[in-house]
Image 1 (cartoon, rainbow, N blue to C red):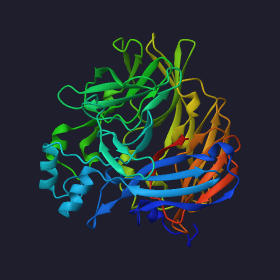
Image 2: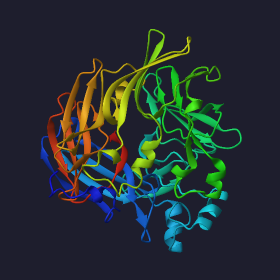
Image 3: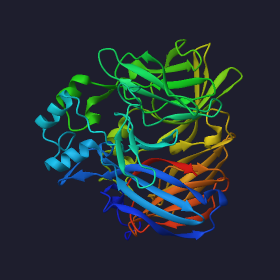
Length: 458
């Protein structure tokens, strides 16, 4: 290992300061389709407050970073999400819930249902409005120009409980779909549709046998597909705050298996469901229908150990492979009528799969993933393109750099990269086929860990 390689602590540290929109340098040649539009990314802006760190990155207060292109120039900003919970804590001068709060405070907040909406996971455009999302709360509206926080919305009472951080667009129907959960004695999954033309609607709901962690799903032209994995919340532990973090409220129940649920969009009450062996599906890349079957690409783990391993990131090094969570890309074929689920491994060391937005819900030619490898026992981070014949094209960043989720935009891939040597971040523009660098946008500050992002053209 390079002894001069600093630890990636800046990636798991608070955003040093917020930045209003300012011009940043561009090298290389930006493709014309990137001359007008914005890349938004969402992640953790605060890993600690009042000198007390959160126990897990999922608890961190959200921060939005925007990279705006205008006629070949680039402008960037980073702003903390000013959630109601964060503002209340700042006013009180102490933690009012979560792992950093004292047990009694934490329990009282849980019993009252006062969970902070960190809005730290994804950022999406819904019918011309921008929303920061986290799976345990309602969407938080963000001003697309200055990144100021407007606050939570429920779309006129449409969303009764939570709203997943992973909505998916259906090109065939020109509609965005999502789900949310309501926990209790009888837990349910609520289904929502946001058509490009018309008002959002609730499609229906379905019951689940236990209150589970359900992070993502996927859409095809005619179906919604869920993998209900046996990562179950112990509600009494959650209410009484037994444990130091939300992951202490989870238990893995492999004997329950993973339930495959397929819902026809036109007839959502005609749900198809059956079980297969247990696995933990975290993110979906895409899905499509062909010859009466559904093909799904997804990232999976054997169990929920990945959540414990990730923690708050402060322990991660470049050479401790045991502490680096590694997902695996699988492709499953679902025969709905025969209740058959057949999966094969496509590639190890993968996360954050993406396809071209124009192919969402349709058969796609390729997908892109964040990937990793070890060279002389040192982690190298990169991006991989995988075609339908499993032919891989891979780009690896320099040692000491961490690549985020790849965001496809027409013939390019946008990748936010953290560099531990300079403690700054930059955005790489790679051509989508060969993953060769087309342009680079340098930020004069470090953007901490981000999970997901999206491009919004003008």
